Amino acid sequence: MIKEFPKMLTYILISLFFFNLIPILAIIFPSTVFYYTFLLDVWIIVPIYALVLGIIVCAINDFNPYLPVLVGFCYIPTMIIFYDASLLTFIIAYVLINFVGCIIGSKVYKVRTKEEY
Image 1 (tube, rainbow, N blue to C red):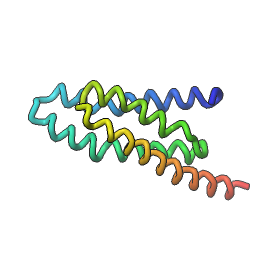
Image 2: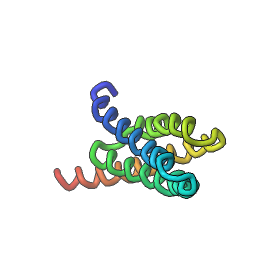
Image 3: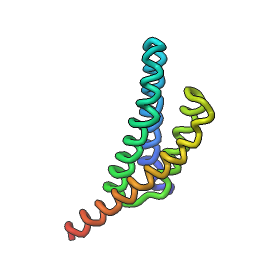
């Protein structure tokens, strides 16, 4: 984990930026837009981001068991600051979605590395 820390720090910072971008934009825009961006963020954008992040990172670096946990931890501050505490169960769903993405990315990595040799 120590040698992977610089890469993981990059993914953590990107995740924190991405998770907080839409709620901050929703605060800047009028309150009528906030409800729709909330639904779009929680139900569509973040799950797609979690899946794609898992696929891309694990397709490049092979399976990383820390990534789904870090994605969950990165979303906790966003949930606490911007959303209701009743939505904390979504974190488990995002971790599972990211885990599935990691499995898919790991399969891609193995196929890619098998073809190189």
